[in-house]
Image (cartoon, rainbow, N blue to C red; front, side, top):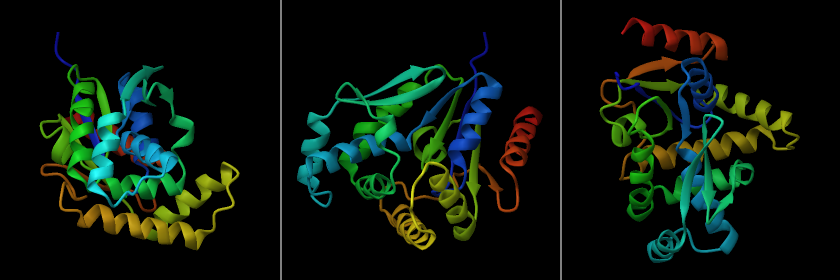
Length: 222
């Protein structure tokens, strides 16, 4: 039997990676892997126990004493930290900023790299993140880089948070997103950029459905 494909979706915060990846995974009958959630899981614990996220030594201790697991729940990989399902606690802007910060440390990336690759061994995976096609799954069958302007991404994130009952202000979200962009693009290890051989998809002025259809058509043609 032919092994199912591995599809990577990379791009900056707010580009629509999560929504598009979930749609693709559902249509293809694949597992959806949100790799950013792994970093958020560690960030959540770092915030919880109040360690210094600028200290390599403290982050090393965090990594050595923290158990991070992925469990397939209804076709989606959920993140467990020390046996606790933390999915519903890691989606705040604060946790996202910390996740971006700690992802610049080698010890953190090394801890999570094998876990991510293990998820793709059998194929049938849509992996979303910032270095999926460039580092984690360099031999992926399909690589996409989803992009959008900062203004468009901020508008989407603001709308998403308002629907969840958040009172976050537009300017605050834009500032946080700009900081994350800078951290992700300038980090020494696996900086955010379109992976070699990837197809860049500009999602500005496109609906979620239009982006999904565009990517699905590229997959079916290859």
